[in-house]
Image (cartoon, rainbow, N blue to C red; front, side):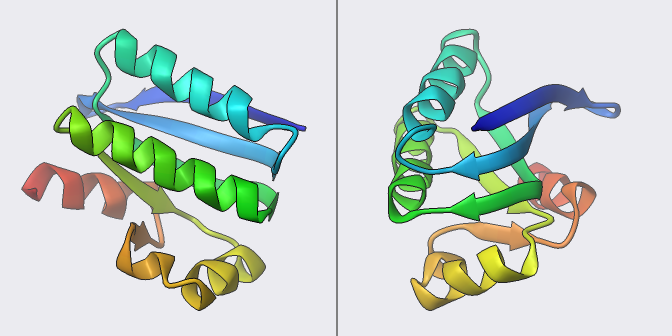
Length: 117
């Protein structure tokens, strides 16, 4: 199961933080992608995915991150990952997602990078 909460950063309403919780896998990926698409349909274009409470990611979950990133780029949007736990960070590094995504130690660092882009 995956769940998430969203909130705009206190100092920047243009950046939306999604706190991901649980597992991102074949059973949950479409839910997350549909949720991000709904937020995009409402006008959101800059997302920080806070992965602090993400416990597992499968290859389908990795593909979902790529799909979300592609959709956002096609609409001049940005996505960054923050607070990625050790095991998941290692998986991202092994599959070279650190070349595809901006990955930060904190939501604030991710948001600061987006503001400068």
